[in-house]
Length: 114
Length: 111
Image (cartoon, rainbow over all chains, first blue to last red; front, side, top):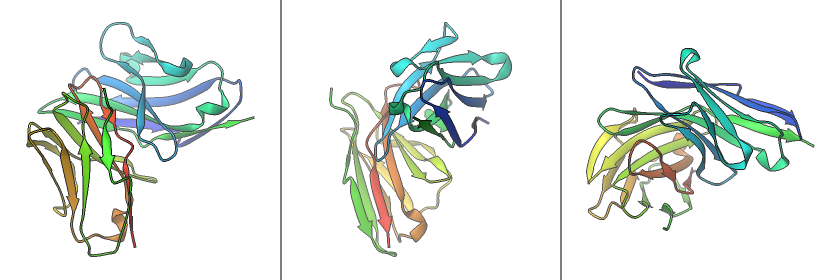
C-alpha cells in the first residue's frame, strides 16, 4: 500500500529563515513524488516533482526537494522564506496500478513571521 | 492551453438535497480525478475516470458518484447531502502519472 506522511501540520518560520517541510512515503514500487502548494480558496499548484534521474529537484519560487530512497523521504526546502510563501503545502506520491492514483499527505500549513 | 475549470465555484445546499459538480479537464487529458478536501482530513480521493470508465475509487459511500463524457468532461454527484459533506471538491486532470493539474475547486456548504 502507498501512503504519505507529512510531519508537522503547522510550521512557523521567520522571514528570511530556512523553510523545511518534511515528507515521508511508503511505496511498494518506485514512486513519482510531488509537492503542491495551495493558497486560500484556490486549487493546488505544482511546486516540483521527482520522476527519474537527479534526486535533487528544483521547483518554482526557489523551492527544492531531495529524493532519498534509503530514508523514503522527499523533504521540501527553501533557503530564505518570504512572506508570500505562507500557504498550505501537500506532498503526494503517484503509483501506476490500474490508473493514475495519487496519494496525498494531510498537508502542512506554513506561516511566515515578519 | 486553458486550465482545469470547475463549475460552480460555490454552492449552498440543505441536508437531503442532491448536488452535481462539473469539471472540464485540460484539452487532451483523458484522466479526471476528484478529491474531497476538508480541514484535518486533507485531500481524500473520491474516484478517477479515464475514457468514460471509472478506473479507481476511494473509500466513500455510494451517495458519491461520478461520470465522464466522451469529451472528457466529468461530473460528480452527491445525493442525500449530509452536513459532513461540506467541503472543497477538487478536480484534477492528467495525461499520465507524472503530474496532475488541479482546478480551483467547488466550495460546497451543506446547511
